[in-house]
Amino acid sequence: MAKDLPREKEQRGTGKVFMWGAVIIAVLFVALMAVFILGPFLVLSRHLGIAKLQPPTPRRPGG
Image (cartoon, rainbow, N blue to C red; front, side, top):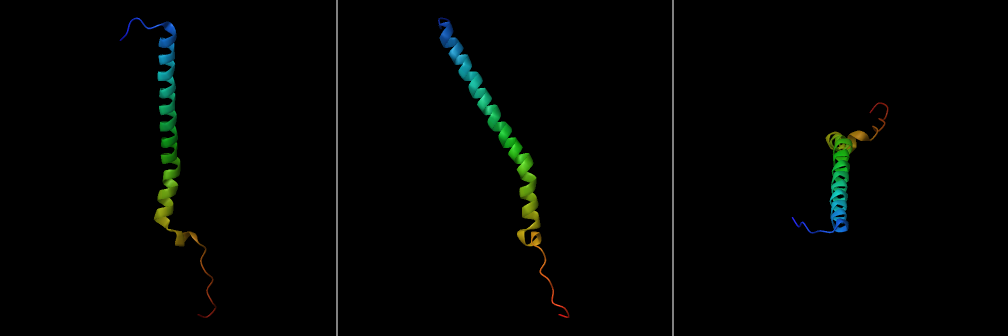
């Protein structure tokens, strides 16, 4: 590590590290929320199929 860094450069570098850390945490949070909230809906819709989600067609009497 360089020992002769001015205080302003050191603070700027620390700010960048914290900013990128916050960005990575936010992206991970959004990805995990998408997996755990949207995931079950996607699995359920794939399991049921679109045909089962449509209302049944009425039957003709006597036929």
